[in-house]
Image 1 (cartoon, rainbow, N blue to C red):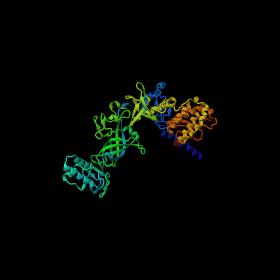
Image 2: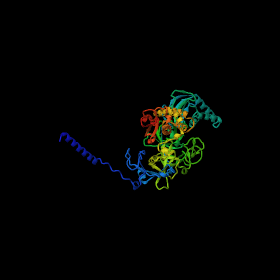
Image 3: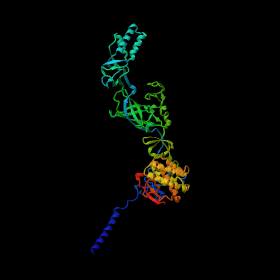
Length: 610
């Protein structure tokens, strides 16, 4: 045997051995057995992947995309005309889909509103000491700002000829008749000049006027402004000192617009400051600004904060929290304010019954007039977990378990959402307490309805919409001569969307509207598309609906493409929430109008129409 023959024989032996070993080593893994005998005896009409509903086959297996076990779906297909949004599932499908349900209940969900801000002086506790008569500052006892003073403590020693003359008037009138009106007028004059009663009595007891006079604090607090120096001459009305009482402070917070409906006068606010880690301070909301700050787009909120121990300082940054219980109709439930009466101008004043405000004397008002729930038992809203709600654009869908059926059946239902709390949502309409809803696995049910060409979350209108082949108008309803007129505008619209140019897209739609006329099925489609608020809502579903109608009309009337050059139908499998969508274009290269620059070349040319 030649050397070449020996070499070939060796290769053949090695190849055979490799195939044998490969089969032994890499034998395919056995497929998992179905969960129940029902899945074997009655195979599902459709087996699909819960994560990739576009995958469907006639038997069990694994998803070729993610490897998950396919889910068998058994539905009451012949009965779908009566309940097009209802899906019935076998026990095996229910187990594989891991569907979880919960009874709808009425309760007050809690939400935490987080705010940030800064402490400041209480403006109502700021006092200015001004010169009530011309004087000279001979000596300053308070010679720097920040000095704490008590009511009646001396601030400065002054000399004033007018004050000396006023003292003589008092002494003369008192010597003649201490109880006369002249004596009372002389005493009142000195009181109005900020002399304390004990200072006036000391002048009378001494029997002679004093050349110098001690200026004393009319209130206690901290001197936050000093406007004079020793030796200064001051005129009547000039400011001398400003004193701030730090026994109560204001906390200025900033709230977002979305939190405004949860905030009320009189609510308790808990906050922390870095100076005292681990400690929580409290106050009450006393003011909510009537306008939004145009610079920050927030609403100023003021909280009155007790500060008896003086540990809080103006200027400190604070982080606040308001724990809110939500009631129906955007009201707030505060257990501590049920049946209470609140001051309308000073909501920190809260009493058990009607009366007058301790600060301003205004009549108190019931708490419910400020947005609080008056009857908590009857005003608890319908609340569902946030995971139960499927959202798309302005719509929200919840799947409700249908009672009284042999199989587990779930009906899609549109609901109106209210305020959102922590992991829950208030339902304003569409659900009633006691109904059983899907809290986990709702998207899998919705995907199954899409596969079965039934109305679903994304396509509620008709079976055609759910199948991803939405056609808002029949091809025969669009005359070929009208189609020829609007096609140039359509191609401009496709190009504008591929460039992410919202303004150009709107201009193209106006061109199409002018060509289509004011009425008709096509005019309605174009007008609805023109009403999109931004490029995203224009693309899906509006441009998709318009494209489906135009494509169907072109396929029915190919003569309308005369003079248009090459017209291509392109398909993107990722458009329309991974259901896929088509469009027409004249460019030889794919230019995706559904994603624009994000995925400009995503798609494939499926046919040339002209």
